[in-house]
Amino acid sequence: MNKPCFPVTFLGAGPGDPELITVKGRRLLDGADVIVYAGSLVNPALLEGVRAKIYDSAGMDLDGIMAVMVEAVRAGKKVVRLHTGDPALYGAIREQMHRLDRENIGYEVVPGVSSALAAAAAVKAELTVPELTQTVIFTRRAGRTPVPERESLSNLATIQASMCIFLSVSMMEQVVGELLAGGYPPATPVAVVEKATWPQERIVRGTLADIGGRVQASAIRKTAMILVGPALGENDKTASKLYDAGFSHEYRAGV
Ligand code: SAH
Image (cartoon, rainbow, N blue to C red; front, side, top):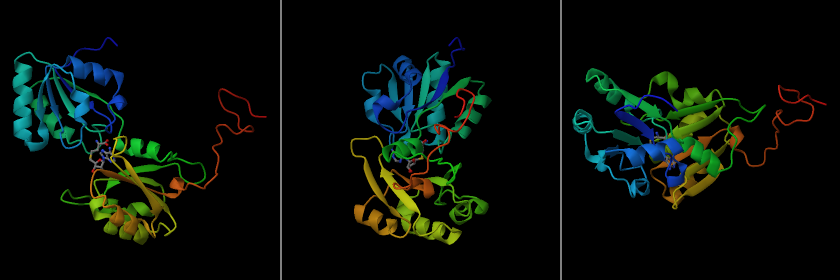
């Protein structure tokens, strides 16, 4: 597209598989002079062959990250700030964008495949099954980062939607306790996907009644997505109306 070229791009790297970056993202990575990436989660395979100078933000604080980015832009360089999954979710991009605003440096955000959606793909789930739920909640349990009380897992569980729970697998026992306390029945299906789309991907399935023990036995402690809700059931045969022969829509008349 004929959009202006921004000195800084916040770029979604996708969940891990190097083929799951957008075509635009790949082009921007290949053309970058400086790449600052979240080394703890971004697959380094994405950076093979790039000509840019690479910084791993894992050991850097916000000041350090901004100093690298601002200095590079001032030197006329093109900077890519590479975030895992999609930058809009738990990416801490807002404070970086505020700093760039203050420096009068232009930027764009290029989306990526969130690990929530990669995890759903791994378990071949549709998160929005008619009659069961039409809502997906992206959330996390409070850890060192607080979560507003009204968004506690037990409050969110009252909605009985599909939930994608980030950053919480190390607190699995509490997660399960709060989801049950909020009203999901113990038979509610759960899938935990570790390192979705990486070669080491692992999937643990169960229900709220037994997933705690299963996750503990699997020794999954980090980089995992917890998917919960009635739509995660493998045996549910509820069909979408979209392809139902009797359902009319814009492109097809029902019979
Ligand atoms: N912006 C990212 C999320 C960053 S927060 C995204 O859209 O995916 C980091 C959390 O994301 C991890 O604690 C884990 O819950 C989840 N996560 C990131 N990569 C993952 C992967 N490949 N498989 C499963 N979960 C992952």
